[in-house]
Length: 293
Image 1 (cartoon, rainbow, N blue to C red):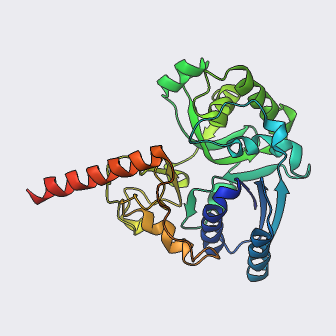
Image 2 (cartoon, one colour; image 1 turned 30 degrees about the horizontal axis):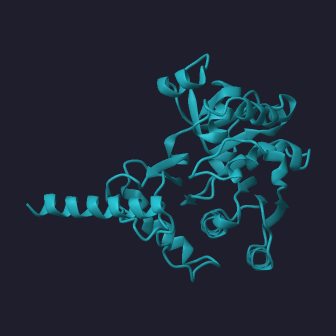
Image 3 (cartoon, rainbow, N blue to C red; image 1 turned 120 degrees about the vertical axis):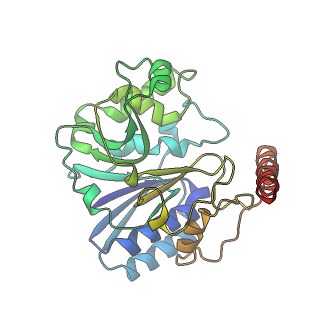
């Protein structure tokens, strides 16, 4: 299996958690490709230890030149790392025709072989998406109403290269900054415009922790579905100290088994994070008052 992770140095810990969960639950032979902005000696040392521990794993790291991604639309919640994956056709070896992209805020709870083995020979990619995404379709002026989440993508890299998908998505984002609200995700949806195969939600089980705590059961067998890849979307992440949703425990479970096990919860650093923390504390207090009645 060929797996791609893209992240900047701020996300090294979270990549470590996702990678650890992947390797624990997938003893297959795996080629891991990493796109990142900075390769310091501490990160390199951790990668070397992982390669020694998991003999069936090959890890290749590419340091991204961000000059290739200048003038792309960003926001407070996005960095240029969101666009790294659009460079995969330029950077990855040409003999790779198929690759599974995973966001670094994912946790893998079981084997992903069934997902990786899907036949995508005639399609650009397979991803979890909606066939009735009217709002996104209207905003991006799509010809159809299909919109997918880019956090988990099984990609036909051969077709991707032949049709210059990455380059076209970068150019669209640069030329239409007011239309692009979800960065590379919007750009890819515009270029691909529905030419993707939908996958079951268990392969990209999105959970938004920025809303009122829902107290999901941590045991994956008690979810509404049986998720294999849990994807923490939204502005509140499981490593934040102001995240009170019990689902965060699955992130910490794998963190404690990783080389980043000494990490502690992150405290608010910006005004927006302080406001987010206050909101979550208020929601938690409100819910406790409701349930106590």
